[in-house]
Image (cartoon, rainbow, N blue to C red):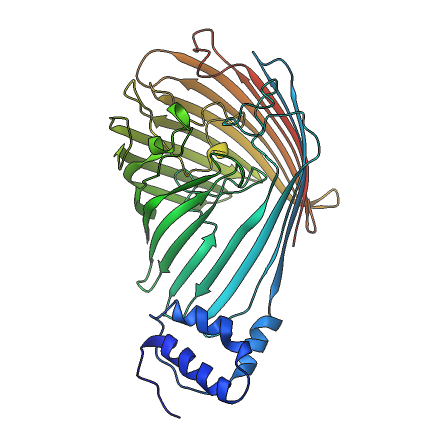
Length: 446
């Protein structure tokens, strides 16, 4: 067996193998693997052999990706003439191949259909303004298109349009609750070669947001870097992170919609643990971050973030209490433009942008879960309470109650969800107004 040494890494093997196959009259079958390997020259050197069958096996091992969600969402918001009544259907269809030369390909398209027009899908576009915003615009496009390589030991390299979810998604997530999720054009490297240590590095230059390809705010451009280092210690998972974001301006988007306001440098840490005591499970999460402007951000600030949570569980019940504090200096509040914001500060989504005077969110929740009950594979119910106040000044922002019922049967998941936000008398109208939301949806995932 002859070893190839003229180029370096598996790219040289792919080039030599392509030559071998060309001579054998089988050049078409290796176009994609050659491109994959040429894009990943760090892979280890391998031998030249006629193994076209491995590509065939990778294609045979292709797994379908199917995610179909039908949703009804109602929104009633004080100060807006009509209630929103949004009926939508979202389908993600694609597939992921098996591995060839340590590389797999994932391709997934997305189609989001508006079944009626009784809601405002985009707050950056002055249409349907008689309705509250339901951020599920009609959208058709590529959701994910990525190559993943695992040639290096304990290392995954992912290139292309991809989903990125870090920790609890407070700083980086895919906003999976909305019909159009967030994906990133990025190069991501995950290494676990050191025991208990995970190194997660990402370079990204495009963010494909929930507003879709036709929205003026649908895509953010600019070079950004995500560093996330996790270590499993006796006290729990300890994570250090640095998120360096730099977004380009977009013509016509000014004020709160200006992407440059999200250009920030955020550095912090997180510690989370869960441990059993007899029939109970106890847990805690602590997190801190410091943030300052980066790039062309027009604002001047230095804000902090604090989060603390305690949980206790027994016999299917989990009780949690948390305090989340995002600072503001009177000009700008702590920003998390890549977060899955719907998971935090209430499902009514009244504080997607942190107020200039910050926000202190004190919450409590009770969740019950059960498996194989009343003919359903899994059933859960949750009740959540939030009390909101400004962090910098003495101002009450109001309260919110959230309720959730979810059932899973085979590949189907049904959800009923309700949010009721009531603004305090002292809450400025520009920050938040009384809002109720109701969702009913069914989702099929294969």
